[in-house]
Image 1 (spheres, helix red, strand yellow):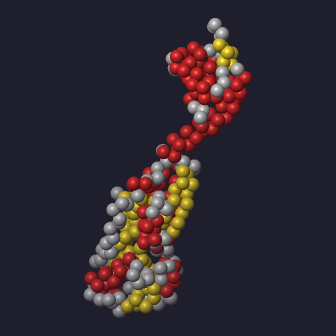
Image 2 (cartoon, rainbow, N blue to C red; image 1 turned 180 degrees about the horizontal axis):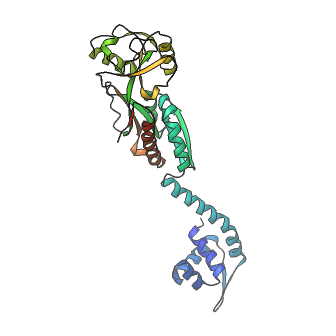
Image 3 (tube, rainbow, N blue to C red; image 1 turned 60 degrees about the vertical axis):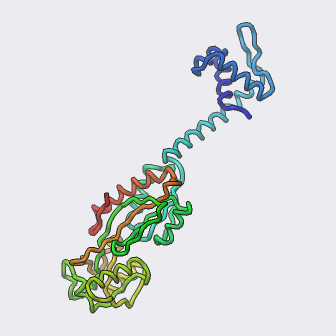
Length: 309
């Protein structure tokens, strides 16, 4: 097998016209150059120079090798540069997972900034809920995932995953525009015990959080309508079919719906990025940094959202 170092040395000798001049150009000793050329001659099983008393003349084999080596060495240089880019996270592929509201509000800012800073990184996005995304990260099918948890529904991440906190969201109360409490700056859950609620599907963290908040207020909510689509939830509230509690990222101001804060209840949803350090893709470092910056920017633009340190 041909050694690229020997091919570079051969090229330098042919261009310089002597072993001594090539050695000075390469920073080698004359003996090292002679040994490399001898090793290359053994590899190709042909002499590469006609050696005179004070001169050397490249053989046709040497001229041919140098001509062919130009493209080979150039390709190798490009490959080495790409490898350096990959190890620095400038080149590669980022397989990212996210849940819908983060995809809608955080990722447009984050991915646009990331694409500007890392134009040679290919981004692939998959969407799902935390229970769907976490196994994909652990299996190595995703490099990074945005997931969430509610303070009232504790959820430890698997030990092999690293967590990076991005932001925290208030839970906002959605009321029909004509609701008697629609003009209030904040509403206590105790004042909503007779309301019909529109909530996420049973068994989800959002639905569990609502049940626990209402339990703290001394009652069990009447949950007649369920959907994991926040636009559907807003539509039901707008129609007067019930009230709802949604994370700030999920709130879209819309006609006929009033959003207000809860009074006397600490309710938060936290958004984090998780990845597996044992198999960390170098591009993850840059992606996490951009997502943190984007979360801080989003927190300055949207009410009810704060960036986490």
